[in-house]
Amino acid sequence: PPAAVAACVALFGQVVAQEAHRWAHVPRSARPRHVSWLQDRGLLLSAAEHGRHHKSPYAAHYCILTGFMNPLLDRTHAFRGLEKLVFRWNGVEPNCWRDPVGGAAIRARALNGAGAARQL
Image (cartoon, rainbow, N blue to C red):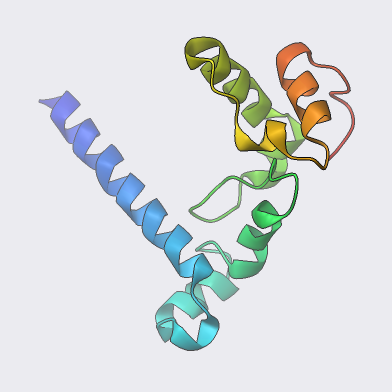
């Protein structure tokens, strides 16, 4: 069962990623020292890196394990493509499209590539 092994590895990886994301929200004083050590070295998502995601219009820095891929994914607008795909599939707009600060431009970029060269 290679498929079962792959599913187990994927699920375990998701649990690890969610835990890394959780630690990015915990104050440094309340985190275990080994977690802070890993965050300081970029091996786990830091509060500073993740904090960039929690700024209006909430349309960048989505990675929750280390944040390492954020620059590439943000520069290529990879998440705009995923937002478009999900929107076409279920009709639900992501929160960043409804944000009063830049939401309309993000929506336009996702749906028709308008202004794709502009950085957020």
